[in-house]
Image (cartoon, rainbow, N blue to C red):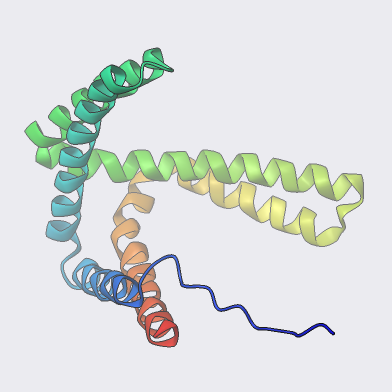
Length: 176
């Protein structure tokens, strides 16, 4: 005779960690909407510090595990250089980094749009074709107007932070 039992598995992340992440995202989102310039400058500086420390750890990792040492050395040097540049040039970094992100997103939009159009012509339907065309249009707009995208980026990130923070807080209480 077989007995059905319900196996209860422990979550990978404690509920309070999800709650803290949600609160942090909510606070950062609020600051990005209320004072986007200074908040973005602070976030970019933290990113520079992160890149610098991450670069050091990548180089140290070569001595711990020498597998793939060339990539570790390359990423370590690149992280250290990027971190130093961002830390030493806070104003330029605050203006340049969002513009670079917008350019990357624009290129990604164009590539994903082309893939969508190819899928549409291979039998994916009109939906894939329309979404592909819209993706290409938005990618081109971002690519040819990165400053507009960079100016809008803090507000977009702020909205995502607030919505994501609220959803994380709800998820944390559901986990509990």
